[in-house]
Amino acid sequence: MVVQAYILIQTEVGKAAAVAREIAEIKGVTLAEDVTGPYDVIVRAEARNVDDLGKLVVAKVQSVDGITRTLTCPVVHL
Image (cartoon, rainbow, N blue to C red):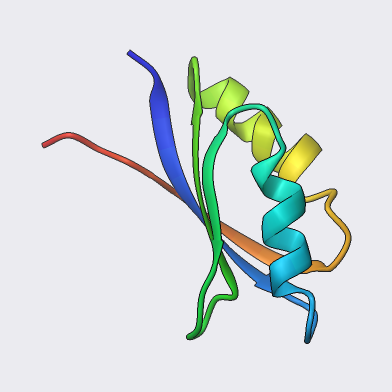
C-alpha cells in the first residue's frame, strides 16, 4: 500500500498556475491544481513510504521556483 498526501502550497503572487504546471510533471504527483483561498496550489502525491514522501516534498516539490511555503497532509484511513 502506498502513502498518499495532499500538499498545500503558497506561492509568490501570480505564480500559482506556473507552479501547478511544473509540479504536475513530477513523478509521484497524481494531481496538481491551482485554487483560491489561503493556499494557491493543492497537490495530491503518493510514494512507497513516508521517507520517500518526505524526499519527494523536500527535494522535488519545494525546489520549484515560486513556492513560498508548503504544508503536507498525509492521508489516513481510520
